[in-house]
Length: 246
Image 1: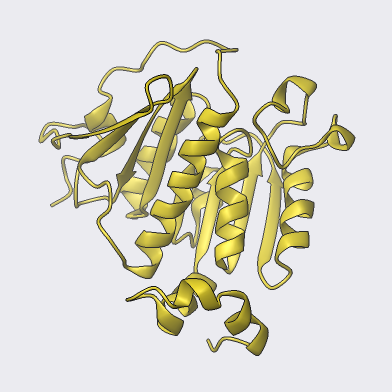
Image 2: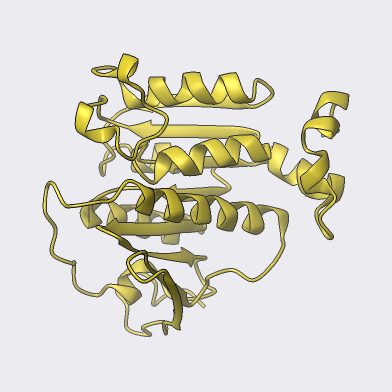
């Protein structure tokens, strides 16, 4: 799949990175990334994936935009209140980059549709706000051998990791017990901005084949004291989800 003249100009600066080049850009153009959740994490992640030239971007979210979303969900504006988030985001992304395909799916992610939603995906980006759905994504991605990049946030803090089935721990290895959750938790708008952009960077690295990924590691961010800490996390050999993988 060759790059057009306009694509070569659009992506010129990133293709100058050593190891990226036109081959890396073609990998992005041929890729399909499914962003699950178009909120605080999904918005910045989606727009940077689109800007980088991910050829097929699938946006999945069941909700419509509310006023309390606007402190962090940057693809939804005042004029979009009450509109489906996936439609609001799709419109902005297509204005930024008309050379990629953006699909908007307004649905709740559940056992009945998860396999169809991840079908053909190169990478899944977990931008959800609850672990029930995250663990569902984890299970199906392990079964289908699809990498996914997880992030979660709370207040000024957040964490992030990359799951590549068979090459490191899955999300259940890292979180054997479901963390406590609240329907409406505190969040500074900039926190998911930081983590969402880092998720996009990790997805791009994974597709292009550059750098070191957060496989077997979890990154913790604390915006109050502006620290990043990376810890190694082992795979659980008795994990009910991934123990059969070599």
